[in-house]
Length: 180
Ligand code: MG
Image (cartoon, rainbow, N blue to C red; front, side, top):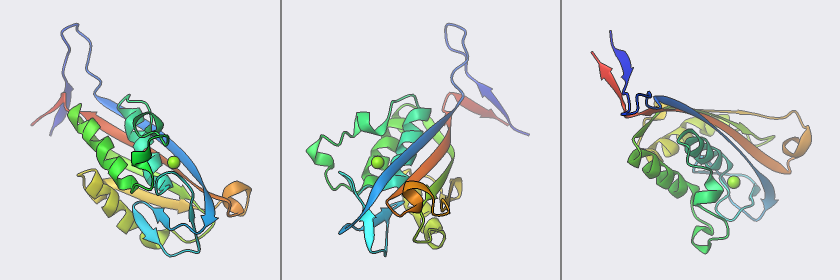
């Protein structure tokens, strides 16, 4: 049976063995834009408005990952005032986020997310979204769970004005060594 043993720093404190992070995002739904969620373009008459491709799910994932690693948020690293991010595929932001985490020795344990959308149905695309996000994270899609809910016609999401996403992640520090 394996056990997890955190390293002890020179000052005697335990390294930050596991960290959780939470991300939330919401974007306005408008005509004349492609709908991109989880890196996947979904057939729909409207799309999300934003400086990038406005991928609400990937943005929530970036925020959760950055939060868990104590690295601030997506706006800090990829500001919408920077022209180089205009129209960018948000999976590129997720790749960059993953790079920052890897450089600091963080490994993804799992990612769980919920997309809030009145329509279209997200369920048929959830596995393909997980594959796209896993590729960007150099991870396994089995660690990524994507689900969806409507808000039963209530509020900004329910009226079709917006889509939102929430994400939570667990990271493991490489300072944890598995002992067999
Ligand atoms: Mg966003």
